[in-house]
Structures are given as structure tokens and as C-alpha cells.
Image (cartoon, rainbow, N blue to C red):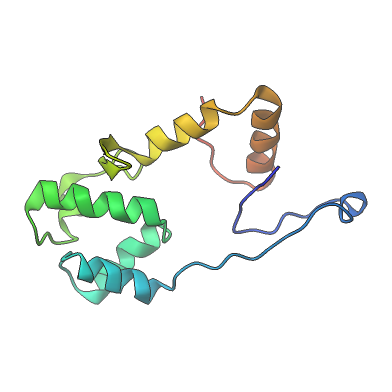
Length: 137
């Protein structure tokens, strides 16, 4: 089983011989700001940075946001349009793999729907143990 997390789990000593942890770094905030600017999203560096922090640097969410903004406000949208539209991060619709109505929620629902109950129980355990939020119903 592959579990991805920004936090390294505290595993029991008897599992260390067959478990591995590999750090996977993401892009720095400044790189995400540059990418948003390259996609013609307008705004001050501090406003763009604030959104990248809220989106936690999630690449799919940032790309969906660009599409959402362009549909909302044209080819050179301002990042502040998000505040005016009272958006929900999980409900932003955008183009992903040819589907123009994709959202993070839809992708998470589909991914979680493919897990068998045992794997879903393990995932829920790690979410609850780590104090993370879970959107499973």
C-alpha cells in the first residue's frame, strides 16, 4: 500500500523492516506564483501567494482555479475574483483529462470509491490519527 502524506507517520518498530519513507518535495511558493502569472492570472504577489498557501500548492487545484477564473472573468482574471465569487475549494470546476466539469471533490470521491472497505478503513484510521479533516460520508 502506498500512502502519501506531508507528515511522516510514526510507525511501530516491528514495521520498519518492510516499510519505507521517501520525501517528495513540491514546488516552492514562488514557483507557483510564477506559474499563475504565466497563465495570465492577475494580482499582487502577496495576493497570489496567499491563494497558493490556501490551495496548499496542490497542482490540480491550482490548474482548476485558473480555468474557473478565466470562465468567470475572462482571459486575464484577477485572483481577487475568488473572494467575490465565494468559492469552495472542493467545488471549483475546471478542465481535467478532457472533462470540463472536474472538481477536487469529484476526483476524491472517485478515488475513494475504488478502495475496498479494508483499505478505506486503514485510510480513515490514518486521517483520524493524524488529526486531519476527512470529507468521507
